[in-house]
Image (cartoon, rainbow, N blue to C red; front, side):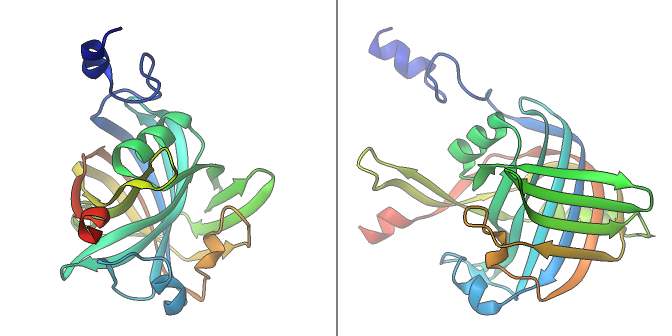
Length: 248
């Protein structure tokens, strides 16, 4: 394979058999369990990178079931999303993500900069309760429960919220372990079609763990919960801030 062929073929690693296919990626019947909670403002300030600004001391803990996603397959995800502002515009900063499928871990990290780690999240319907858990190895890291579809909520409002801007910190190291890419990336969910959305009473527990440190942002009070199902496309990102150029 000559240099021109390498340049033409290179998309993702490994060169001749990438870990994930080219986008776009469409998700069908994506099920969200989102439990919003109040946390320690000082803990939030310690993890949200400038130029993002913390909007309020709230964290959205998400469990997401993805039974049918083009290119990525069938998997489940869990993590923390923080309401922020960028240049005065409301948005969401994706702080942590844990999932059970290699292709979206590799693709999410390499393309957008999603902070993904391998773990075992689950969403299970148990009678009148939705039970959502995150295990890292044998250890329980997060446990959420939510009543099953107690009250329908406005689908238009949920659709608008899902279409809002999201931010990621993309970090790719150089061969000497210094940052070669250090960028704030913005992306949107596109062609969002919400088929149902509900709110119910919810509870959330986070447990101390050395590697899956979701408890770094402690639960002080649960303030709301959303259960929704949607089809959507994960849009490509754009760089809105280059930390290395700014430093130069």
